[in-house]
Length: 277
Length: 172
View 1 (cartoon, each protein chain N blue to C red):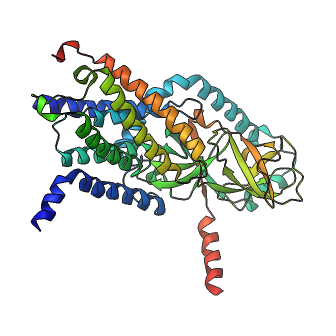
View 2: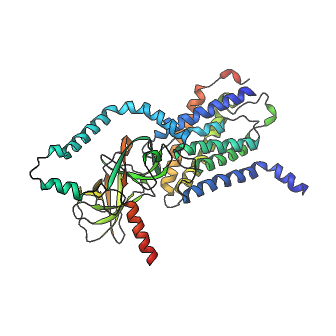
View 3: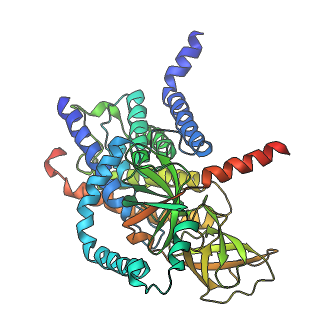
């Protein structure tokens, strides 16, 4: 027993190392499987507040670009206003009033922390559960899809960006409606992604738009990017296309969190069907 | 004693701030990412007890993890770094020759020793960090390139900061 104690004290560095290393690795592995079920992330109060303060400072540097993009979006939205259409019949009003129900709601948010050069990139937004944001909601911006909300605190939320090796969303080619799934490429390029598992019968062309499908948590038809290369990865049973992303993640400033009002109803219904089987 | 503690607390805060607000956004060609914050562990005094060293390494790692959204990743790498530091100092430095708790800085230990120390520890830390992050062997070539280039960047920044705070009269 005494010898054992002497042995342990002599090599204490090694045993301490083992204990601490195992502790750190347990945290690492646990976080991987439970999708951020821990307080150590940018949604907690200390880090979140610090990031939002620094971001306020940084915001001044890009005011001009943000103004430009907001102005462009304003113009686009103005084009969709009822006031800018000539009302040619009364029945048109009726159709609009009775058959449409709001399915998607948007909460505007500001990006307070963003990374593009890691394997798993996350974005922190300045809205949280107080503003109605919940886990699993989609995030888009004026230019296209941004990511999925994975963690929420009262005032902040963390978004798993498209530039994340775990992100995979349902997507299709705009013209031919061929469905595939979109994921980030393996070469860590923040401007490119892959559209994989597209049927071999599809005939995509370079420059064709890639948009979201109605199966995803995003509204159908939100832009993801444009086809840039028809043979991204050879040797697979389906087509794999390279997509140039439409969103410039390095300059992300303002985004919208999308709430699908029918999502709860839909998942509830689908759960019933599963129970039946 | 209290001066050493104060200096190290300031250094901790300063390095974490520089890392997460400045260097986090710096990447050269998607290959070279500096992790300067490990300088804190490198510069802790020689006389520090092993247990305290490991605790500080873990705390530093978790702090950086909190800002990087990667719980445990940097912590694991920092703990390994602390262990390598103990071994390296055991082999190369005789502890008896020192009084008033010196730190392994450029000004105390000289350029050659500090350079070797920084390079070896940085390489091991980065190698472990990047491989743990990627966690597969199929991209080993790409990962190793990132490890090497990032280490060069980190050591470069370390030497610059070492020269900034260089005090020539300290070594007698």
